[in-house]
Length: 191
Image 1: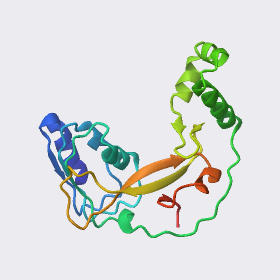
Image 2: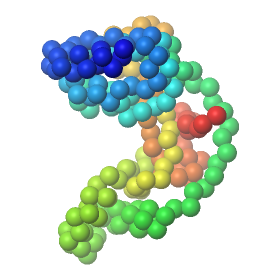
Image 3: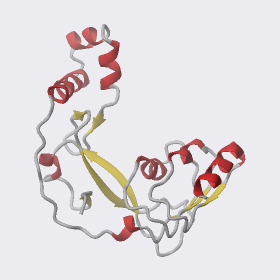
């Protein structure tokens, strides 16, 4: 049912201003929402959204959307119930180690690597997917810890009064940085 509503909304394109997916038992925000640049109001209350996904991050960071009303109460994601998780250090692959080194050297404008990387488009493509750790500022590629920070919604959003915080996805590079995080940054773990 939710899929049909979204397909109809996408066909509407720029004419779609409101999407109501309340109580549809969806488990994640559909990525197709990002294809609706003129979306103003999004209703997602009372679903089963329990994981921070890039779509929520995009919504809360306003990359492409002009969202002014966002209703998302009643999803398990918003319960904010911390639990202790086992910290297991991952063994990085050689590709991850090398990618991190190269990306951090390129950030420092290393002239030899900058010239050399121009000769290898597959390497350029691979490192273009890099993410930057908000704690240490270093780049990483494929191994990270998914965290969430709850932030107040923007003033221009029309939301119900009981929604005081929305989740913002944060990816960090290692447990070393996770242990140095701010107290308002929560790791996401399978329980």
